[in-house]
View 1 (tube, rainbow, N blue to C red):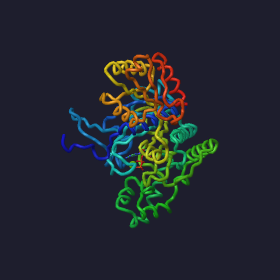
View 2 (view 1 turned 180 degrees about the horizontal axis):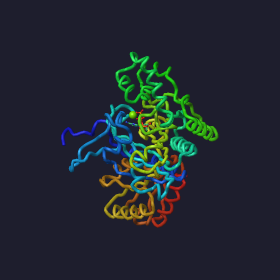
View 3 (view 1 turned 45 degrees about the vertical axis):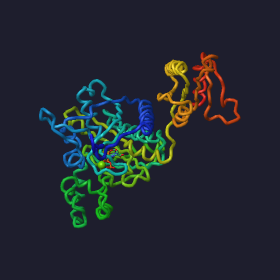
View 4 (view 1 turned 90 degrees about the horizontal axis):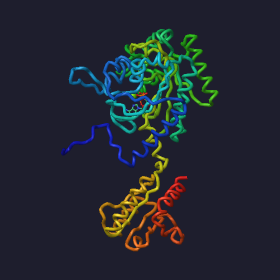
Length: 428
Ligand code: ATP
Ligand code: MG
């Protein structure tokens, strides 16, 4: 085992952090269920073709970020880099277009991309996402954007900026693309090497290149929303109207094109400050062609995914850790008291209380120290006297020195009820 360490870009989540994760996942599930979305759980592994066909052969994800390997039977498998492709595969595979044409799904879990690890960018990271399949109209886009904003806000992240764009459709994008290539060719000596290549294969990606020089070129580029066909323009207008009605502020970012090929029409990103170039905390868009591309019927859809690691980075900067139930700690002296302590703890745990003891069975003093270190709210003392009288001495570790709650004796048979009442008071 010597020298074996966690894989680069991947992390262990220790208990102090997992409190945050469970709380976050719980809140998100609550919000999604409130919107009528049901949870979808798909495997972490899929056939490689699912991703290369949907995300697009010439995207960063498929070209250089996927964890792909050969299975024992020679077939190619990939650890999922995102959730939408799997959701669409499941929608097709379970005949949802017939069973439940309008499907509302959310999912949560790890995704894998072989990127350069840095703050807010990992090789295994977690996303929560939602997909609304089966609706072409703008109301679906608005619902999804609202769900995205509400989800992130429910976690306490309200200082965010929503950016919006339209990428047009198969009717209007080709002409725009041609116009863009013409423009880019006039400036190609200023573009980075990557963008010179993108210009041929995926010219829209030049618009969101992070290089300073490319940025300058992109600033003067023609805008997609000026080139939308009537249907796309109307759709975009209606989405904006819906957001205005909900008082969800946004601004239009002409250069937001998203890194996945399946998007068309509405695309959006939610940005938070203070995360450097990892400032996108959630993103999504409409993908009307994807179900068909993957061999299903013609079904329009829209979805988003939120990056939970980045959201957590922001939250832990300021917010306090989510609270746990107050801790009860039993300190005992002697064999008989220890057995009694075991029985009391068994009863308390079955009653839903959070209670522990120092299993090292050291001195009274050592056990007290441990109780303090673990942040116990109440310490229950159990020694010869208590056993004889059928009581437990309860110390409230937070009561003031002269408070009468500081230390009192509670009859053994009333202990559970007393502690439950106290716990409820604390949790209120
Ligand atoms: P970026 O531009 O930051 O690379 P992206 O466009 O690749 O993001 P999406 O594929 O849209 O990201 O995924 C949605 C969200 O998932 C992102 O907004 C981000 O919060 C999160 N995310 C994506 N890649 C990573 C990663 N490697 N580590 C942590 N979070 C990530
Ligand atoms: Mg990326």
